[in-house]
Length: 312
Ligand SMILES: [Zn+2]
Image 1: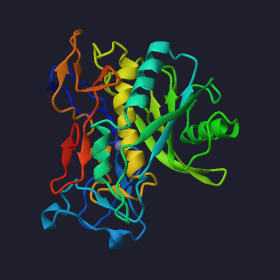
Image 2: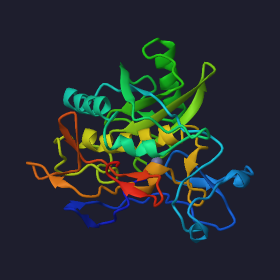
Image 3: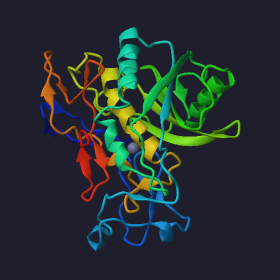
Image 4: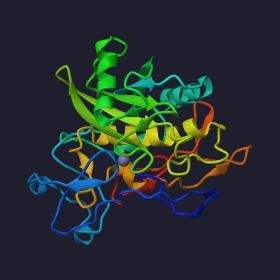
C-alpha cells in the first residue's frame, strides 16, 4: 500500500498532504517487475518474462498498469480472515468498526470485483470472506516493529492456539496508534502484505498500522473522518487494499503488472471514485454492515481493466 500521493490536491473536499516516499519503480521496457507487497515493484531477476501473458496488446508495453496472471495462483476461496490486534492502546469503537468491516466485506458488491480474477484452471476468486477469529496481544516486540516481528506475531498467535493455522486465510496484524514499523510505515507505506512459512505452512499475512497520531495525512485519515475514528476509518481502506492483494496475489507471483509491479489495490490507491457526504461532513463511498466507509476502489479484470467501486 503506497502512501497517499494526492499532493496538496483537493479531491472531493479532502485535502491530502504530501509526504516523501519511495515512489514506484521506473518502467524500463526491457525489464520485468514483480510486486513486493508494499505497493511498488522491484526488479525481478528471475527469468519470469517467459511466463508473462501480457494482456491488452502492444499499446501496453512499457506503459500499462494492466495486470496479468503470472506463474502463481490467486486464492479462490472461501477466504478466512483473522485479526491480531497488537498493542494495548486500542479503543472499543475502533475495534468494533473494523470488525463490522470484516464481517461485511465478504459478499459485498465491492469485494465482488475480485471475482473477475481467476487461477490457471480458470477458477474464479469467490466473494466469500469470513472474519473467522480475533485475538489481542500486548507489546510483545515493543513499539517499533520489524518485518520479521510481524511474521513472528502471526506465528506466536498460531503457536499459542489463539488462531488456527490456515493456508487459505489472511492474517491481519493491526497495530495500535503508538506502534511503528521500522521498514517504512508512514514514510513508504501504510500497510503491506506478504507470505511466509510458519510451521511448514504457507501463511498469508498483512500489516496495517493505525496512523492516527503518527502520519494521519500520509496514510489517509481525514478530518473529519466518516465515523469520527480517523485511525480506524483510514485502516478500513488500507485493509481492503491489502486483503484484495493478498487474495489475488498471495505469494507475490500471481496477478500483477509486469511493467510496474503493481497489484490490483495499487492501481487504485487513493482513488475513491464517487463519494457521498455524511452528516458530519466527511466523505464516504461504501456502506457495509450499516456503517459508512471511505474505501479505495479496486481494479477489475475485464476487456477494459480499470478501477471500480463495485462489480458489476
Ligand atoms: Zn498494494
